[in-house]
Length: 185
Image (tube, rainbow, N blue to C red):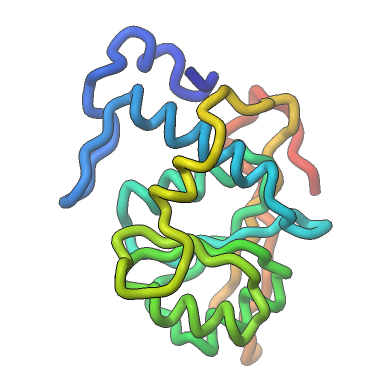
């Protein structure tokens, strides 16, 4: 079990830990998903800045993609799900994102944005109508072993509302994992 879920997860592994209107996951299931996501992300070429983005409405998968990125040593770029494909493409290109996660509501715009920005891989959940890497398949193809946690999380890259015309990226250190050590800035 990852160090992030150990105390509660060991005590109550089959208790529901995360729920959205369509999904309910136990601590044990979350541990498996986070291990697989972190390992897959760790072994993906994310470029020098190790950037990935999450462009999805609130869902269990959205939270797990974000957290998996942090555990997997990526700099996560959360992207507002209200944005147009062109606005998302700007953020993806400006940030140097190499991996994009989308949900069913953002899959079409996300794929269009990824094509514009040259993002090589898009992973999505509950989006069978779109040609992208399926979240469940992507996870199943990754190791369930506990990931190497010696690599500190990288800062998230948050984009401002763009008061000067274009959004600006701002690093936000992943302080929720202060016990791991200092993040790469």
